[in-house]
Image (cartoon, rainbow, N blue to C red; front, side):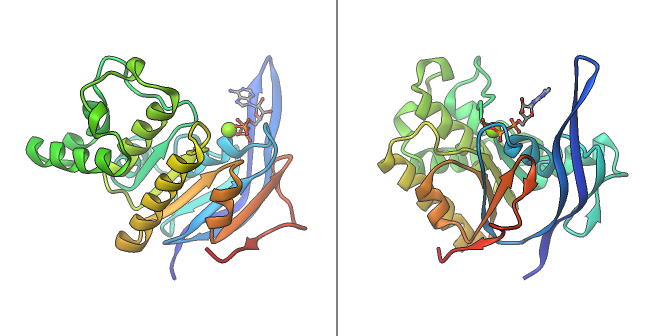
Length: 233
Ligand SMILES: Nc1ncnc2c1ncn2[C@@H]1O[C@H](COP(=O)(O)OP(=O)(O)OP(=O)(O)O)[C@@H](O)[C@H]1O
Ligand SMILES: [Mg+2]
């Protein structure tokens, strides 16, 4: 298996009220391609912050993140944007859907930027919406949906562009057990069929039990007494 990410001495601090708040510390680990990996840990421990770094949305305050063997520190914003567009699907904890666009338009949002023509873009997006149980919601706007439906649209948007890696921040947090189970199956199906790598943060015991690797973050550090927990998916 080849390496998707390598973190070398990664730290992250937020600047807040003229103070530096240290959130992530001493992160040194690798993530393999084709993984199904979870970050777990108490609220406020830095899971979203870490996913933002892996998603190349934020840069570490110190240390280095290698993505597919390439150091990302020296890459320009344009190059990072292009990598995000082509290779990374991101499911935000607060969804970040575009309220003026329909579910279908939100789902297919990135596809024109990837050179997919409009007929294929519609077909690909409708297939993903069907897989996530949202076919009958395609022409609604986000504000006309339930919280769990919105969460699934955010997942659909990440899946529709068929990225190498999907980073999903608590992707089952708003879903009932049955719907969460279907989403996890859809992720597993993509992992098997396309070799897509999946990296989550979660508090969901079922999602954890399906993960190949569970990393526990405690106060922004990987807890050495608990890491990594290899489970049998
Ligand atoms: N923009 C910001 N400015 C200052 N501090 C921030 C900012 N965003 C997050 N933090 C702080 O960083 C810490 C980690 O936040 P983060 O959102 O990464 O936690 P989390 O593990 O994802 O929590 P949860 O399980 O509740 O989603 C928290 O203490 C939070 O208050
Ligand atoms: Mg979070």
